[in-house]
Image (tube, rainbow, N blue to C red; front, side):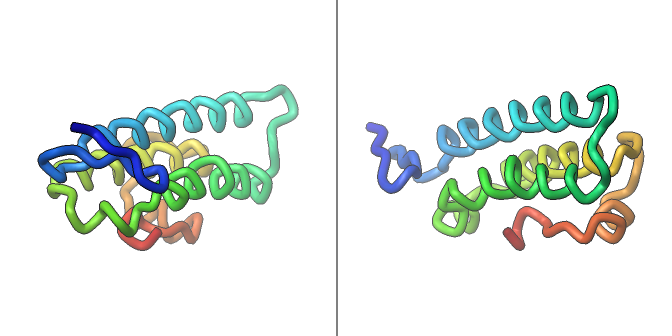
Length: 116
């Protein structure tokens, strides 16, 4: 049985797999929007693209009642969400995929998934 309470999908196993899948899909779509903004002819300046990240990506994760389900996720599921957030951060910074996580967070002063 699935139940949705305050925007969080609960299932019989309390794994939050369905909810995480929904959040990951939403973050992926928002990453695509960030990429489109980044590729515009005139582009956005660094401050605006960072604001777009905060509005489009971080807010989606925060509004998904993350504090309710984050502690119950497996390490593998937490890693999936962290990878999506890093993808978005790389788009914001305009850096290659190989850029290390620590350098990215230092460059952009962004929160990690667990800190959202």
